[in-house]
Structure formats: C-alpha cells, structure tokens
Length: 210
Image 1 (cartoon, one colour):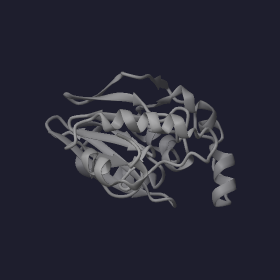
Image 2 (spheres, one colour):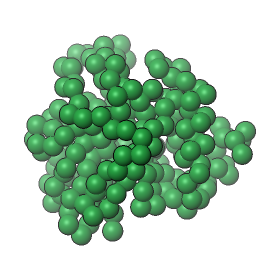
Image 3 (tube, helix red, strand yellow):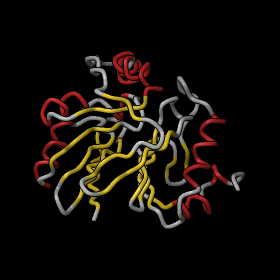
Image 4 (cartoon, helix red, strand yellow):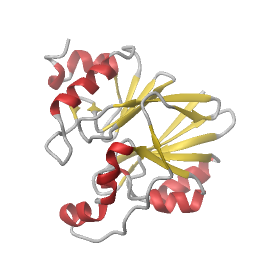
C-alpha cells in the first residue's frame, strides 16, 4: 500500500509529504518548504529511500528545503517548466514576505510534463498540470489520493492575485480535479485533508462549478 507521512513546515505552515511504497520503502518527497532537518529525520525514521523531490509549484514556501534534501539524499528535484521564473525569484520573494535572505534554489534536475508517471516504489502517480495559482502548478494523482498543492484546499481554493496567477486557469484546473472519484482523498499544500466529493458538495468557492 502507499504510505503518506505529512510534516507541517516553515513559517507558512506548508504541508510537506513523504509518499512511499510501504512494501519496499521506496518513495518521494513533495513540497519540502522548510525545516529540512525535520524532514530528513522523518525519512530516516521511516527507513525510506527517496528517489526524487517534486514541488507542486515554485513559491518559496514549497521549495526552501530542496537543496539541503537534494544534497543529503542524492536525489533529483523536479518542477514544471512553467514555474522556472518563480524558482529563480525565491530569494527576492523571501526578502519581500519574510524580511530575510536565503540563497538561490539550484536549478531543477528535470521538468515534469502533463501525463508523466511518477514512480513511488511499485505504485505510480500521474502529473496533472493544474495552473492558476502559478503557471507551472501541478497536482500528483493516483492510488486514491490527489496532492493538489495550492490549487484546491479543504473549503478553499488557491490565490490568483500573486505573480503568474490566473483565475480562469485555476477554474479549469479545479474542474479537472473534480473529475476524480468522490472518495479520493485530497492532500493540499496547506491545511487539513479532505475528499473530492466533500469539496464538490461544500466548498463555498466551488458553488458555481457543476
């Protein structure tokens, strides 16, 4: 079965996920937004071998621990190419929003594309390009769960008033997510878990979506 270990990290309380095959203990990290040592400690405690790091988008609160993890784990880091510009601007964004300096995040080792399959041991997640919050936003879906980044939350949706935000694109991305089965779990970039069906029925921002 697929295992999911959540760690809430960084000043914006980002959900960082260790996702792994509980049978062979191979896995990935999604959105390591800070507190690298806590994430590494959790990986060691679980005994997981990490094959890659994925960011659902390149806002600083989802990538600040990338370089430390990449160095320690000797694994690749991947994002969608649409967020390449945002990744390069992480130091500027941190200075603006948090008031301190951080080094530039190193370039990704590769870019993910729509429909690409992500290996999690013997399981697979599929990349959905879900722009709107950022141009290169992605969701990773499969095995009854959707890691939606900052596209869809429990009771809310992603902001579109930041650089690269696009409300029409976000609407279309959410429609794609709502096509998943109702019982599928949603694991967002912030806040608590939910399900596709619950958000379709109760999310106040989605009342106009059929």
